[in-house]
Structure formats: structure tokens, C-alpha cells
Length: 254
Image 1 (tube, one colour):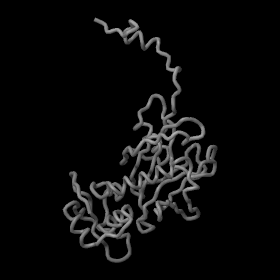
Image 2: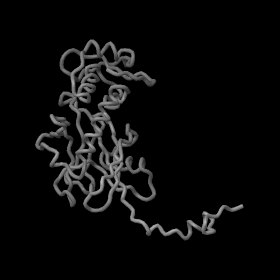
Image 3: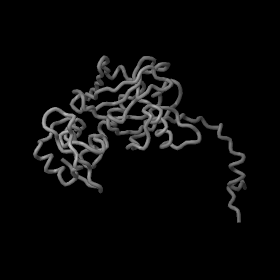
């Protein structure tokens, strides 16, 4: 027996006569926060930004992103944007938050789903997308009174230089990253497959924004890593042992 609504319509009949144009529809975008650490800059935490090459916010800096196409999921759209900006796939990525304040985009009503990706620096070779004039890595410098500063070799961005509501998006991502690094193994996504313990500790310190006591860190980390048998000969001084993360999940709060 077919189920009919109060107007006597089956579901198939209702769908056939339904007019989707009766209601205004917001656009949906994905924004990509791509983080890495730079060994050449004391393992500083860096974020990929693009200088917008067109309106709106011409000349301002923004997080890479784009509109979700009709035939793709949010995850597929995020992976596509990541591939377009970095030529990478199959790296760590997680959904961060949905941003939907009215007026956040002057073009139209836009709801944005932000994703956070963590990549070892050695894997990255970013390229500018269609609406980008430049693409740069910026060192993240959280300041006093919740102010945010992003630094590169020749550009210093304050909150006023950042397009849309991306300053809010970046702050949300930094807080998420800081929280998760304290109780998950997410920091290893920034370290690569092999790393020294000094490099790994520097990653934790860059994300947390504070120094860690070396003996305490090594006592904590020793059961979570294993030696690879290799040595790091690239750094100055005596070669250091290379490690990798042990398999399995674990939790810990500093």
C-alpha cells in the first residue's frame, strides 16, 4: 500500500511536482587550512595562504578554497582543493568547523566548511589556483589579546590583511590543533615517516606555543616511537637516531 500525504500525493508524485526554486539557496564552499612545520626556521608552524587576484578582497590574503560542485561530497571537494593547491593527495585531513555568518561573503550567502590538513614540509610544492595572485607560507604568530600575525620573508599580515572571515577560521583551527596535539598522535602527521626526537619535540612546542622539558618529553615519548635503524646526517653536529611512530592509538595530556 502506497503512503500518501494530506494532499493525496505519493512520495514519487510529490518529488516530481516539487519546485526547488521556491526557496533561496546558499552557496557552499570548502576552505583548506594547510599546516606544516619548517625545519629551516626552527620547526616553526606555518600556514599556506593565497593572495587574492580578483574581487572581492582583491590583494588580501585568504585560505585556499572553492565552491562545492553539485556532484561531489564535502570530503571530495576538500580533497580536490588540496590537490589543486599542493598537488598532493592521501594526506591527513579532518573537518574543522562550519562557518555560516550572514554577510561573511559580499557576493552572496555562503556557508563554508573548513578542513585542516597536516603535511610534512618536504612533501609540499604549493601552486597558485585560478583566483590567486601569489601563494606563500606564513609563520603563525599568535599574539597578545588574541591577535593573530602571519609572517613570511617579505610580508607581515595582520588581521586587517586577511580576506572574508578567515582570521576567525584560522584561530579556530589553531585552537583545535593545540587541543588535539595534547591528547592524540596528530603531531606525527607533521613529522613525516622518520624523524629525530629533537625534531618531534620542536613540533610539539611550535603547536603548543610553549617549551617542553626535554627529559620529561623523552620519558613520555619513548613508548610511542621506535628506532628505524637509520641516522640523521643532515643536521650539524653528531648524527642522531631516526625514529618512527609505533602503530596503535594512544592518548596523553601533558
